[in-house]
Amino acid sequence: MSLNVSDPAIADTYEDVRNDKSETNWAFFDFADGKPDRLQVAGSGNGGLDEFTKQLKANVAGWGYLRMNMSNDEYSQRVKFVLVPWCGDEVGVMRKAKLSIQISEVKNILRNYHIEFPASHTHDLKEDEVMTKLRRAGGANYDRQSSNY
Image 1: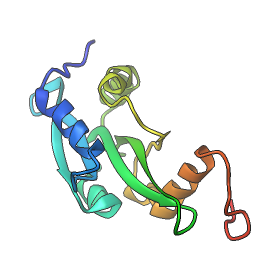
Image 2 (image 1 turned 90 degrees about the vertical axis):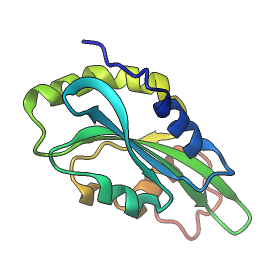
Image 3 (image 1 turned 120 degrees about the vertical axis):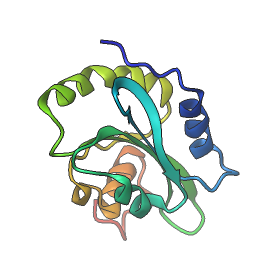
């Protein structure tokens, strides 16, 4: 079954997170009430990973998109993007099954990201673990002496 991603607010919110001039650094997309196959913007903000995780609920499934600042030292500041497929542990079996199919349509909208970080509990989303995965995905490690990955 196809996922309806036609709401222009979805693409607008995605672009807002990507925009370096915007303070928005996260967005969450879930399903419209009564419309299990229509994606909607459930929230966005500028409070980073902490604020994003407060948006997540155990009975909700959806996708998060985060902009995170990464640096190995004071000279190399980089922006990285994280796709977070979220499926709370109270989500029904049929919804969980649909997520594996619908993610391809979501990735057509949320196209640019450095890592995918699936989660089903808020404690899965610890900033140090996300940053470690981003560093590993980044390739060269010029900070070998002080990093432990």
